Amino acid sequence: MKASRVLPRLAGALMAGFLWLALPASAAPVAGKDYKLLASPQKPDTEGKIEVIEFFSYGCPHCYDFNPLITQWAKQLPANVAFVRVPISLGRQPWGQLVRAFYALQATGDLERLDTALFEAIHKEHQALFDEASLTAWAAKHGIAADKFKSTLESFNVSTRSSHAERLARDYQVQGVPHLVIDGKYEILGQNYNELLKNASAVLEMLEQPGKH
Image (tube, rainbow, N blue to C red; front, side):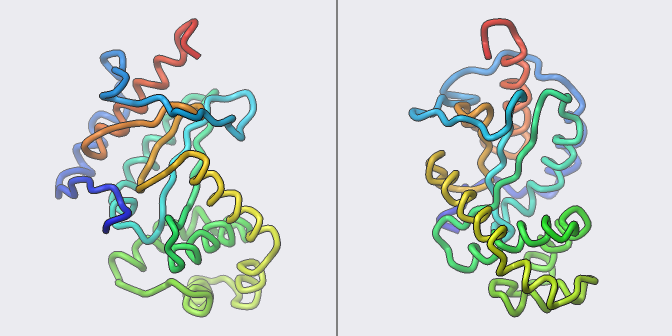
């Protein structure tokens, strides 16, 4: 996909990633290699914590591969770190409906239960869940009343949150997904999924040091 960052999709990537997730970063991160400072830093939405943003899309195959790894990684973050997922469309109308689906599932309380299922429906089962009707039918099959999901999908709250997510993507000048930013100014670099998470951990460790944050 042209708009998605091209990352290796190795068969052993998931297992390899889980082996090091619990280990601390072993070396200080290097600017320009492991991360880059944003030309226009942004003020994080999370107050009092170091914010990690993952920009992603359910429509992106790389995000699908990355999701199990970053989910496990995020569970191990310390209490002073906030992990925030931001779904974006990168200007693609079908992906825009998936942005709304994320916030609709969050609003109904079904996001944790159906997050992986939505990824798998698109990439494993090859369902074209890119419009309101198909998303509503899918949600109904997974135990959400169709009228409830449809009204939530069309709600002012979901529209507002979806617009905010797209604005964040523009402010952070996101060109591809998955895309990680820490503390509003550190864009994490890496040639594969493991490197992205290793470098993110290293930047978080760096920010814990006096004078770095």
